[in-house]
Structures are given as structure tokens and as C-alpha cells.
Length: 147
Image (cartoon, rainbow, N blue to C red; front, side, top):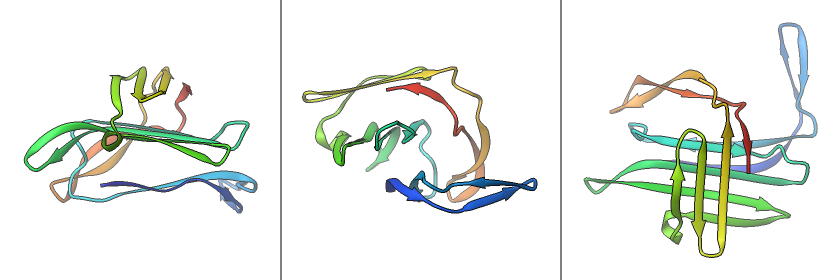
């Protein structure tokens, strides 16, 4: 299960790393949660809230097990000028394209295009497989994208 706690909240504080202080004051944060015994066998996830205006975008596409079957599902949200636009399987979103370089979604009159530039290899993270942390996924926190 995947959930978003906050797509855009203010940050304050600092972190000392290698004797260097990194300030998070006046920054923007994002918090999500995952639970369950296994990760999907395929998923794509992207989030960005580093826009000039107070905006935030997140999209998650995954192969989801449900009642013994599997389907590709999507949940996405765009917050712009305090208005949330939600794109989701349960609201009729159509995944027009989903690959390493491009995501294209359509729901009613809304369309979201995400272009990913030079997808990095990412960092390996432990992941659950049937309740054990035996798997590995690669995630990156610095992909360049155009929305």
C-alpha cells in the first residue's frame, strides 16, 4: 500500500554532514508511506515540489495485485495555487505511455506529460519480498524532468 502524507509542507532545521551544516530553513518537504509484504513487480514513481510557485506533482504507476489478478494502476496529484487535481485509476485515468523516459496520462479534460532526462541508475535500497527484506530496488532523488 502506498500513501501520501504531505505533498508540500514547510521545512526548518539543519543537518550536519562531514562538518558542514546543511540548512533546510524555508525548504519544502514531501512525506509518503508504504506498507505491505512485497513491492509491486513493476512501479514508477516521481515527485517534484521544487517549482518557483508553490506547486507539487506526484505520480505513481504500478503493477498491482488484486483478488488474485494483476492490473496496472495509477495515482497522481497536482497541487497548484492551493487546488488539487487528482489523476487516478479509480477516477478513470488512462495511462497513455509509461516508460523510463516518458509518462503520459489523460483523465477527462486533463492531460499530464512527464519527460525524464537521463534517468540515473539510482541507489540500491532494501525492499520487502513476501514479508522479508530480501529484495532490492533502485531509487534516485535527483532525476531531471519536465512536466
